[in-house]
Image (tube, rainbow over all chains, first blue to last red; front, side, top):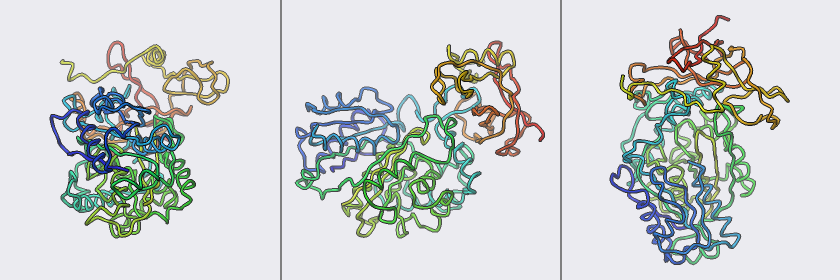
Length: 367
Length: 138
C-alpha cells in the first residue's frame, strides 16, 4: 500500500480536486510508483466538489484506466473502497488501484454540509448530523447506563494521541474537566464529543501481495474485511444501539481467522465519542452494554491494552471521513509512528461508518 | 418577516400529501398494509414487512411514548435562535412507526424515555399543520 497525505485542517481556497491530486502524488511517492502504473481508480465523491469522479481524476492524472468506480457509503467508504480495490486487484481487473477522497467542508463557501436541514423534520428544528447521533447517544445511555464521563474518556485519550501527532488539527491536551465544561451542541453531546470539520485529502494505493513486496515501503496485507449496513434512517431500525459493526466485524474476523484479543492497534471510526464504545461492543471486544467500562481507565489510550486512534482520530487529528484510520493503521504496522508508535504492532483493526451509523465497513490488516 | 427568519416548512410531495392533508384536518394518518397490517412511516411505495404494494392511509391512535430525544443548544437556523435550548423528540407510536417531533407543555428537563404522549395539532400556516405531542398522565 502507498499512502498519500495532503496539508490538512483549515486550508481555505483549495478545490476538492486539488486535494485528490496532491494526495495521489504523495501516495505515488510513498509507494515508489510511476503514475502510468496506476490502472484502477476508485474514489469516494467529494461532498464539496462534484466535478471529481474516478474518471475526471484519471483524466487530470493522465492515465487510461482498466478499472474505475465512484463509491458512496459516506463515512464508510474508505474501508469499503479498499475492500473493493483488493477484490478488483485479486480478480485481475487492475494491478495498482488508487483509492482517494477529499473534503473542503471547513472552508467551502456554501457552508458546512454536515449541518444542513434534515428532511421534513427541519420544521421541528431538526438540523445536522450531530443531532441524529445525539438521538442514538441518548438511547445508548438509557439502555445501558453509559455516561458522559465515559464518552469523555474517549475524547481525552484521542486528544492525548493528537498531541503526539505533528499534523493533527487539535494538539492541546484536554482533561476530563475540559470535556465536561465544553458547551453542549445537541444534548447529550458536548462540543468535545463531536469530530472536527476539516479540509484535506487522502489517497491509498492497493496492489497484490506479490507486487507490494517490490515497492518502496514494507507491505501491509489485508487479512479480513466485511461490511454491515443497517437501515439508512435510524428511526426505522429495530434498535438504535446495535450498529453495522456486528455483521461487518463478524465477517472480517472470520476471514482473518483471529479474535479481538489478537489485535494490537485499532482505528475505530469516531465521528462522535460514544460510537467508539458502541463499536467495541458490536465487534466483540466486550459484551453488550460493556463499552463504557471498556474505554475507561486509559485502556484505549497509548500504553493501554487496546490502543485506539493513535493519530487523534476524527475527534482530534482531522476529519476526512473514514480515511483517517486506514492511513494511521498502515503506518503503525510499518512502525512509522514515532512517539505514538505501538511497540511491535502486527495486526490492526480499522472501521469506517457512514450516514447516521447507516453503513459500516471493517478491515483487518497485518504487516 | 424575512425568509431567513421563517422556520422551514415540510416539503410535501405526492407520496406524503395524504399525511399533511390529514394533519390539516387535525388527524394523524399512517400508511397501513392491507395484506399484513404493518404500519409504516415515512410513507413509501411498498410494505417493508411483506413487500405488498397494497397500502392504505388510515387514522392512527395518536398515542405513543418518547423513544429518545435531544436538546438543541447550537443554532443551525436563524429562525430557531430564540428557541434554544429546545428539544426534538422521537415518539414511538402505538402502531409502531417513530416520528420526529416536539413536545408541547413539557420542559426539556422533564422529558423521559418511555413517557406517554398524545398528538396535538399546531396550525403553523394556513396550509401547514404540524403534529406535535404532549405528555399524558399515566
